[in-house]
Amino acid sequence: MTNASSFPQLVIPNTLAAGPGPGNTDARVLAAFAGAGIADHMQPDVLRGMIECKHMLRSFMGTTNVHTFGVAGTGWSGLDCMMSAVMPGDTVVAFSNGTFSGIDALTLRMKAATREELAADSLNPQPASVTVIEVPHGQSVTADIVEAALAEHKPKWAFMAHWETGSGRINDIRGFSDACVKHDAMGLVDAVSSLGVEDFAIDEFPGVVGWASCPQKGLLCLPLTYAPVSFSDRYIETLKANGAYTYANHPIMEARHWGIVDGQDVEKGAYHRTHSAYAVSAFHEALRINLADGLAKRAQDYVFHEKALRDAVTAMGCEVTSNMTSLVVLNLPAAFAGREMELVQNCRAEGFGIWPTLSAPVQVRIGILNLLTQAAITEIVTKFAQAMNAIGAEVDIDEVLVGLEAHYQSRIAA
Ligand SMILES: *Cc1c(COP(=O)(O)O)cnc(C)c1O
Image (cartoon, rainbow, N blue to C red; front, side, top):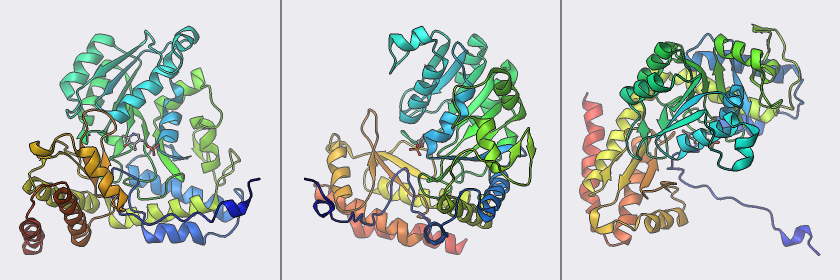
């Protein structure tokens, strides 16, 4: 018989989370999570915390959208909420240039499929009303690509990932928004990787009616707390007119617990689901940290530290193909092509949590979420160089570290 003694207490070690996400959670966020009292989801301070989070989130996202709140869960929970207004038979153009925008496009195909189309291939439906524009791995979605596709298809909805974390590419959100306005499409954006890393205000993109992000990347909160979402009035009106096949992730219904009722802020939230005092407390602290640091400074820090890491791995003979500032995606030197998985697995076995790409071609991904110090980048560079040498590359680690030090000295001089 199975009993508790067969299962000793689970101990999870600390790793250096140098991947695309989750990021290294700030100690203050962890303390807020563990320090919250036991309180139910209608306790006044929990409700007050949610209202304050809502206001901080509007500031963090740069929006006056009333429907701005957190969806319980991870990035996909927020994205599911955002895509819930897409109904069977709706016309959609989705741009896919990697793992995540590919899954987003799959979600849209599931939602826009008719019953017959879904039943024909329920895990991978191919609805006639959805066009997926495939942009090769390693390339960005450009304004020209978006303009051409929206001009041709004139869809009701258009979708793009702002930053495609699978290949580390930034897509042209300005071109996307402009094309949506021009062709009267309602833009939906996966901002899971960009929010909190790049300095942008969502209200500057009038073609985009819905945004979804995640807790654990740029916002530096814990997975399974809250995925930020924001919806324009046009989105909400469309949703109200047509409905959505969900209760839990229904944007209008979910917003009620955050004190948003009939398009207005109200003093106190109304029950939608059982919120966690721990999650609210952590999310609140993460937002406070983000607002105190300021997006402009945070974004500059990412640019500076990504450059340090990029230059160091380039000096080791790797080729960087990404342009995100929180993540470096690279090919190993030609002599080691094909050994990316081996190298990544060696690193992970030692608690150095870097990642491979999740779809072909296999590349190495090294992230710097909340690792914005010289000490942290130096640790990453040293560990990566050691791992390269372990598979036979003859990296001169001292020389690489001299170059890295020079990068940091340049900032002190400047
Ligand atoms: C990480 C990521 C997701 C998925 O987020 P989860 O928190 O794992 O649910 C979706 N889209 C993009 C662009 C991402 O980077």
